[in-house]
Image (cartoon, one colour):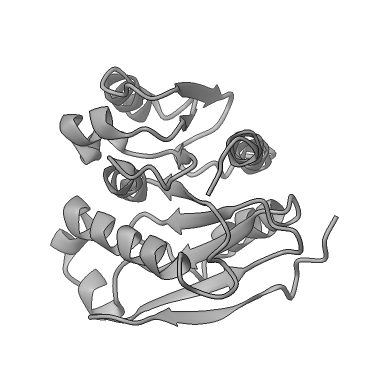
Length: 218
């Protein structure tokens, strides 16, 4: 197991606006997991940091990315602008493909809430993406044409108590043509705050990324 407490650092992705992120690349990383957070969360969230650290312990590089600037977050319309959020993810993927520490790593997406819709929208038609994982996500927000165009194997993780989101995930999954799976975590709510449920998410996501990175070629 790698010591991943200090293995991440701040990076700024150039552009308008510049995007702030935390990058962590363990030794012999298998691939790069790019996070897409929902509203009210971000790169400095302790829960996101915990998930990222656990993934780095499993030799997965992580990029915790704020898809919106602070000013943009103040306008609630931006939070649900899936097309814009997806374009920022594509920007991050392009950046990572040229950045020294990550350019040899195959990318994957880990989206939560609205970020999951953005992740699937960004993955649509992009054969660089090795896998997508959604945690308590809104994959339906990607739209049917985008869902049908996703080729990356996709894992949809939902809490058993998040009944409305279970239905939305099942509906979205019916539009996916790629290999996909829905896993419902017992006793978990939307945010996976119940004891042990976030660890189960990390286990499921880590396994999914491992399987698909090991089969991926750059």
